[in-house]
Amino acid sequence: MDNLISWLGEVGLTVLGDTVGMLIDPARRIFLPGLVITLVIAMAVTLHRHRSEGLRGALRRCLSPHVWLHGSALLDLKLIFANSLFRLILVVPFGITAIGLAHGVVSFLDAALGTPDTSGWSDTVVVAVYTVALFVCWDLSRYLVHRLAHEVPFLWELHKVHHSAEVLTPLTLYRVHPVERILFWVRGIVVTGLVTGIFFHVFRDRSVQLELLGINVLGLAFNALGANLRHSHVWLSYGHFIEHLFISPAQHQVHHSVEVDHQMSNYGSCLAVWDWAFGSLWTTTPKSVALRFGLAPEDQNHDPRSLVSAILEPLGTRASSPPAYVEEPSSPA
Image 1 (cartoon, helix red, strand yellow):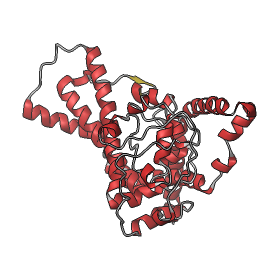
Image 2: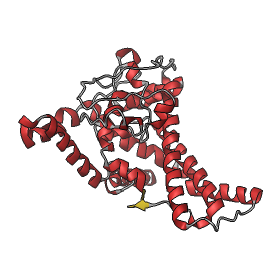
Image 3: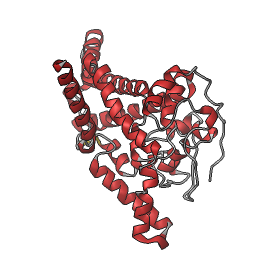
Image 4: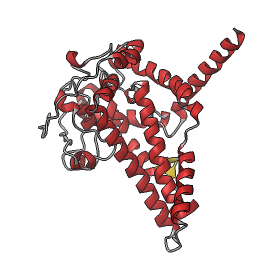
């Protein structure tokens, strides 16, 4: 009994440390300095739209307890802890890592193809190409998995946990069913391992991505430009032209709308070119749009404010066909 209590205590401390550590990990979206930058951007946008309310009014809008203490927002927080626990139990013990996969890819390619001569490539070019390749491949893979989560019935039942959010905060990014979370972890390991393995086969240890604070500089730049506002009530549109290239916070908020045709658009994470190329792009305008977030009653498969319901009920729900896609949606603005 004492051993069980000791083990549970260690697991609890590990989960708590992993979760709280997200605030000091630059690779996480809710890295504390990043949240501060997000608040500054949110305040600037809100002040611009509601000048008469002043600084205090803008702060109240950005940090409204009606949003942050909403039952749906509290489930976001609970799922962060739950997913840390599931990761510790179901992923970590297997020791699956991108580095391990990369070593396997290098060994296979070396044996099959030999070692290529890339002495003509400068270190600067290698770093630039590797940095861009890793960023683009990561972004494309996230688009594809996200779209599958909407179009494959079983995956859609799981993904409904994310879309059931009735209010949006930066923590909503982590409002994911544990099974879907594991799928996304595996996706990241596979993409990083394959891309890194191929580059190490070709360029060896010159395959280093350009980083700042240990993060791909392209991903860090996107995060710094308001990525956390994707899950928020602060409307920030990049305008019609730029939104063909990059996904704006407003575009992702449209994706979270309760309207079915909104949900079947803007699957991209950073780049909008995938949505543009595959016909799922929905652009916005600077004019703020009132959206209702969550799922329609007929689409719900769990209680959007209950942790137990969000984890168990999607697994027991008979998979239904995802809603029909609207081929060319019109702007919600």
